[in-house]
Image: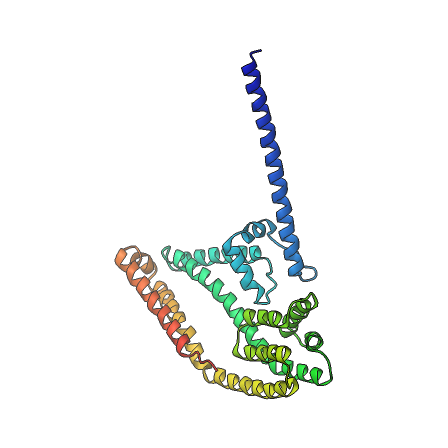
Length: 313
């Protein structure tokens, strides 16, 4: 055999072996990485008893994207059972598809994509609403939290021990957040870093004041018990003020949601009285433009009413 041919065959065979070995190593590393991500996710957010994790394949692929990481960060502060971002993403797609089909069936095919976009926006708004709701519940527990910390500190307990005790006595979400702080303190994190994480997860002025009081006391010393007693009274007063404001603005809040509901009801009424009217109207560019402008005005009204009714205390 010609030496050149033998050398070529040998080099080709060696290249094939190296390619096969490289592919094998790549697939093994990818499988190990996916297993590690799944194990860390299950350790960081334990599933409820008797509940099986759904859509693991979608979840593994989604966690490696910016969208998946963003959904995971939002889900972490909502307190929902939908811990894996893949599960929420699949449910969102199913809901958007259902809304698309309903809008296209009851109104007109033109409203299908519009309803799909509204469904995607509604999914993000739902997560924001859950976060705001959990933050509100946490703010309502702050007076009791400050009282427990003051009593424990007055009894001679260290601040770390007082936080761990408060985590056991308080219900969710304060109990869960303080348990996370106690775990971070147990592995060597500073009080400022551990409490600052709560302020980032559940932002509020009341929590910032409480965290600042605890951090300054731990750093420079001082009358922590007296500060916490005064802070408890202040938090109770702010809690009552927020409740009164929310009661006074309840009618405005209902109005904000009635504005788009009236627009949707008008479309359904028109299509009911004149079957096929929406199909004919959205079949032309002028009709489509008019519908989009009307939807934009309804959305603008909703946003303006919500913005005007938002009062920071």
